Amino acid sequence: MNQKKTFKFYIALWVAKIAAVALKILRRNATYFPGKIALTICPDFMGRLEKPKTIIGVTGTNGKTTTCNMINDILAQNGYGFINNKYGSNIDGGIATTLIQGATLRGKAKKDLAVLEIDERSANKVYPYITPTYLVCTNLFRDSLMRNAHTEFISSILNQYIPKETIMIENADDLICSHIAEENKKIYFSIDKLETDVEHFENITSDIRICPKCLTKLEYEYVRYHHIGKAHCPNCDYKTPEPDYSVTKIDLNNMQMIVKTKEQEETYDLVNDNIINIYNMLAAIIVLKQLGLTQKQINTSFAKLKIVETRYSKEVYQKYPIITQLAKGMNPIACSMAFDYTRKQSGNKAVIIILDDLHEEANGSENTAWHYDTDYEFLNDNSIKQLIIAGPRYLDSYIRCLMANIPAEKIVHKKDILEAVEELKLEGIDKIFILHDLYSIEETKQIKQKVKELIDKKEQNIKTEESEEE
Image (tube, rainbow, N blue to C red; front, side, top):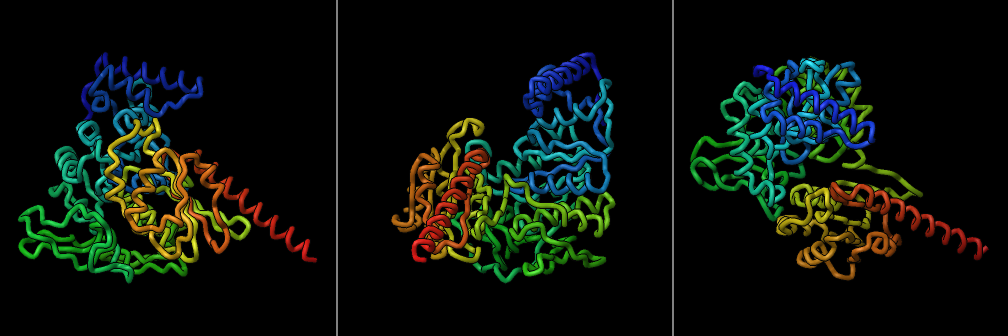
């Protein structure tokens, strides 16, 4: 329920709207600052502002942005009117800005629906004022050590502040995520056991090995990655919950999956073959189903979607597939999954890595311990013929690669990005992977262009040699 509007609230609203207009005139980013101003003037501003009747929230360590983008794009393609923070911040200031943009000068909501990506660390600043109708929790892993500390810390914040009225949509295969907000109504999603699942952990880290209720060692029936899988406590009732929506079959040859509920089975076309994005698709399907969309509406829209290029892209240039993928520095699980995905792709590969947590947008450098929670060992694979490491953190990554027993002769390591890429060897290479950080998008574009130039140079040399032979 919205709190009573005060004179201070209206001042905050109007100043924020003026600031938003001024920033747009100056061609500056207006996705965070207006909300920050409003919260400075009126700290409980979001509690007094009228919100849309239905609010979809998406939180979790990895996959928030991709899941939200899927939901936003499919809703838009099906004619839904809504507000979202797709181009803005997912913390309190950015969310306040989104609500301001979706409100009249009197603080009335213009739309009945909102889709909000919500940073899990900001729970204490958001949920006291906003009650999501549905809240997706994609997963919970260790993340930026300086900001998020540990999953138990993040879990405690979520458990304390998520409103009891909110319906939770949770990843059942994540034992941490699936036990958030225990008293709330739940909708669980899962992917059935896969042929690629294993009996024991391959990763360096696992964020839950001990039962949080009785401290007994958990028993895993299978492990998918990190602590994602199916497990139970042999001493109490703590276990992986039964799903309401489950993927029973993934057909990568036809790029389809079968989703089963208690009532029916439905087939959906895959947007991407990465297991994380299949989880993201499943979460998006549940949200869209709750909003009344049909399988046909959702699947027709999936056929038009692709993962945002800042997250993943694939381009075949002169017969060379060039794949860019977000590895997300300071996030050991996201990096490990990018490394694992790369090694499992077919063919011989050259891999270029730029993990730049020194970027000013990342608030400078932080504790480098995350490198040692990251599975660089996945890059020690026979199919990876060359590893090029560049950027401000190149020495940290290089040392970690040596600790993973990757042969030094396979590795090129230089601070200057283009100088390092200049040493790319294309002989015997089928694919080039560029694994980049969230704050290295422009550098990634430069790397990709340089790779294309090297491919052109190689092809020109081949033509010259063939001409001379004739």
